[in-house]
Length: 625
Image (cartoon, rainbow, N blue to C red):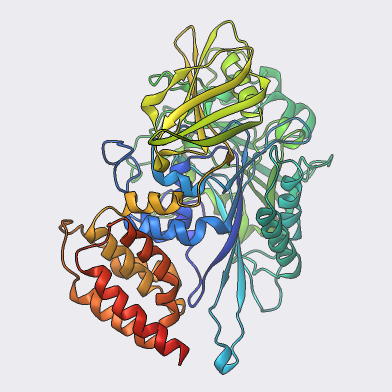
């Protein structure tokens, strides 16, 4: 079941059901990469797109499909992220569309907000003329992966709403998100509160189909209030896969025999020797990359401890980039899945989600675990980990753990402490006109941290070259001269320790005084020229709710880049405009403000303004007739 070749991406998991289109979504993640968040509303628009491609120039044009998707969907998403854990991203103007999407949260019991969950609602278009009502459907994704581009091994549980019998209820997922609303560190806008409460109510009323081989399903939300561990106290056989482990889990949370434990050697080395299960006297070398070759035996030995090796280095030990060990931008590789598996007679219990085998995960952190029950044949440990004659299994990447050099348990560094302190400050950005341009002043009422060993710099995310040192111990007040399209509601920080270690992160900042024309100016810059404008227009005109909306449109227009010089109106664009004029004149009316704004800025292709005016006038007359 957990075969190395079985890969499912977030984009694949978010594809709407046939005949449906995106309506709204809410999500929670521990660490957040803004580039990965772009991929969510863009859906298939980013399929095959490498976010690291290009020269990193903030003025580079984004794919037109991405701009379209962001305009259509970003305002209908609510994303909660652990405060202080937004990674520094390249300077991109397009992040402006995400400024109101992200809400920083903290755990009420002093830990971290660690779930990785998506709740997406899709809907059909409906047709009042023939009596078809709008139909809505929910999908819930519970993963061990953050909203990042990490190249790590993770798990994901996908649950779809069903109208059939024998489904399960996911009300606890809704309670999780309502609890996050209560623990936001900013004033939550009304639209976010309305969205979260609406989706939570829908979760309470809906029924979800059970995955194949699963007889029962429960959702356990940890950390919003005091609760005992949901893990069983005893089992005939058990397996725990967890990249992070701690003594407190084995001593306090689950002080029973573990038959098989799989973790990263770096964290196994930190455990108290007396708490570890018995370790084999002789250890094998890590398996080779060739998965077709012989691997470790699938026979279970009681008290075995395994390390995991897929040939990649574990992310937290890499230091060649100078980032601190727990910097939100440090990529994770290798093992990141969390699996708690138990067998009793012919029944199996499987817990998947965000919680590691640590004390804080079952105490102070906010976490989520999905409990699946079924037969050993369907959900048993061997079924999960073993391969077949044709395909290797996850167990082929296990190797006997041999204790290395004892290490002290890694604690919070001064960089981590100061990052959290800055991210928790209430920062506002005040936008004003300044000469021929604009200025934004980022301010706090409380003083900045006053470290003796760390230097602080900040800059608006859109203009990386405009970084400046921040005075410690006094309230932040930094004014940046900029242009309207480069205003940013994301403020970037760099913390540099005197030993050369860095921590870089981003804080979402509400902007006050932003002119209404900002989005229009930004669109003009991002769309850029005739070819991009025509592709954008075709995407809007092709959007057909009967064909999965945005995703269907993007699939039809995606392709190799064409010559992007100024061109006269192409025949496909003219045909589409005339067809829309006859079949759906209201859609042209919806596009008229954008076209008018671009025409006023002399940003339209040659001859298009006159053509549009004629077609729009005819469509308006026919619509009024």
